[in-house]
Length: 371
Image 1 (cartoon, rainbow, N blue to C red):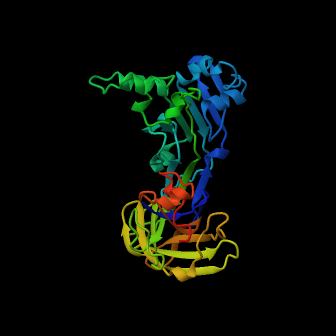
Image 2 (cartoon, helix red, strand yellow):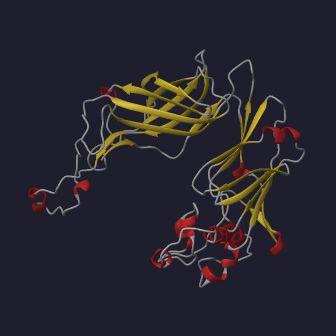
Image 3 (cartoon, rainbow, N blue to C red):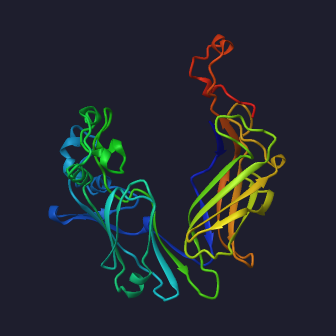
């Protein structure tokens, strides 16, 4: 299989004009379970076990048999809440809640009103709460987390539900984990505990954007996906190493994308900050919340990234900007990347390879190092 290699750091640098971003990791949070008479400081990102341990409500979850004695935490519901201050309540402001990870079953309230429910630990969620901000007087965000083991058991007990053989369950301390979109090892493993945690496990934000009928709306880039490959590259086949690079870019946004929006790119050397190339992406497609485009890149302008011991780790900063019909930048995102192709060699191992001590099945580790 031929893989387009995009070496990326996890940090994204997002910019937009005058937007307001409230990082909820810096807010004061409260974790509560009223039936258990528990109310302690909470944090984001975090989970219930960590905040209870920090508040000295429980001992070290890894100590002794606490994996079992603390199972009541996973079998209970928990609520995280925080007062969101400093919000713009004007009519020309859009307000969004953005969650990069909620683990797992939640009911979200804002300003005393139900916003949404979630059921997937692995996806990003975003909600337009503009009307609630304008009409609400106290901007309290409340997220109730339902017990994952209890909900999984309820799903498993539904009429005509699919059944699973005993061998599927045997390695897990808590059953029915296959019915929900949650880290499977949270239900125990042959080597690990079964905490089945709950909480806001990834960063979360409140995003406010100016909205105008006479000009391009502000945008916030919530996701960016870049793919760099050789032109004509196909799975399982070594690509033409003299072919141009093909950049595919896809940006997901909050706000209103103008139908006339375009994408520009700029590569700079990550060490010297020298501009290497700039240009405009083509084949633009614009939907309500996503814009995509492609660009052909001159291969002579970029140095390959090499594994350690085979050459330098050349990296570049890539900035992709969304522009309006006047070529004014509405929003942009910067990521660090390298240029490299990798091919999974699926050919039968040769006698010459065996003579060098390469075992059958190991072609993947001895392939195309000079690309």
